[in-house]
Length: 196
Image 1 (cartoon, one colour):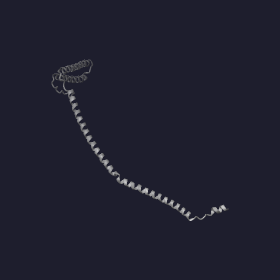
Image 2: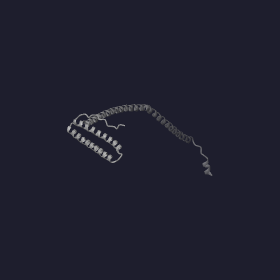
Image 3: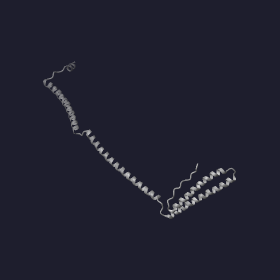
Image 4: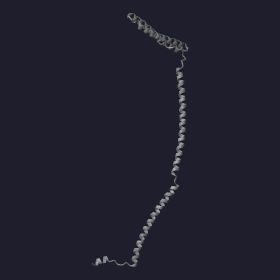
């Protein structure tokens, strides 16, 4: 029991011991107080640094306004470039139209070689003469056929009238070709139409 009695009973501390215990607890309290004060000071310094940095930093709306003005200048420059390019395109289109007109005029210009014109006119006149011979032969053959068949005179009249119109148009073309071969301007020939 003596051990239990010794453990349960505390010995009174001397003044020096009590002073040491109090100093230890005061030292611990001081360290805690300094730590909390240090953390508070660090937070205040951080907040102050953020505020100071915010004062020295550029205003975001000012930077955005500068970027917008820069972009507007670029847009104006691009519009000027576009209008200049459109002017160049219009000039090139006009030049191309003039070149095409000149090329067409050269193509459609009558040939300077009269031998070529007369040779072409002779060839075309020969074709027209052959066409006229075919029409005349058809007329003779249809007339002979109509005399062989009884009651066929009415269709022969219509058929002959149509062939006569084709023959007249062919003769008019022959006259135009003759004028062209001589270098004259061909007269306008009205087409032959059937009268109602």
